[in-house]
Image 1 (cartoon, helix red, strand yellow):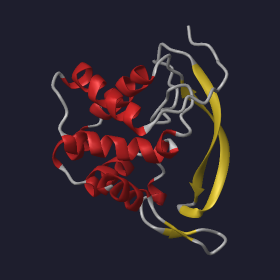
Image 2 (cartoon, one colour):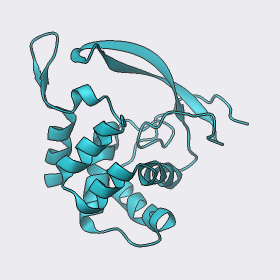
Image 3 (cartoon, helix red, strand yellow):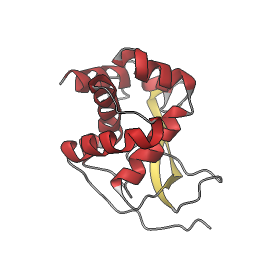
Image 4 (cartoon, helix red, strand yellow):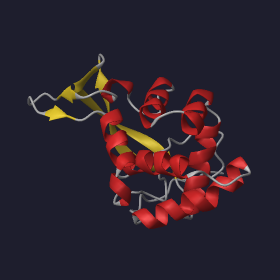
Length: 170
């Protein structure tokens, strides 16, 4: 039975996250990852977790809790675009999955991606832009922030794709 647990910041350095991706990959895919696959995965996790600074309960992908998940969960605030306008955001409280270890979080994150064919195709064969677009297509993130946009204060913001490609290229 799942229990509500306290949201605890479990930050991880880039090298720790990359190593967790490399270690978890064979558990999910039965083979070692390529450099390109690790780089795309790291770039997406870096966006979700501010480069590892804000990982809560080892949930590297900010994966929402669903009734089929056997583990615990925590509650967190998030936002979404109202009427397709990324500058108009509405806050809400969400339940997110909690994990005991960083590697457990990465395994579940990779499993989630594995179960979304467009994402897997882009992760295995596509460019970083293709990967971001596939994530938006399956609503992994708010698709209205995929491209660059101007917020309600008139400030230009890089979209998800711009950020993912930039981090991938580093």
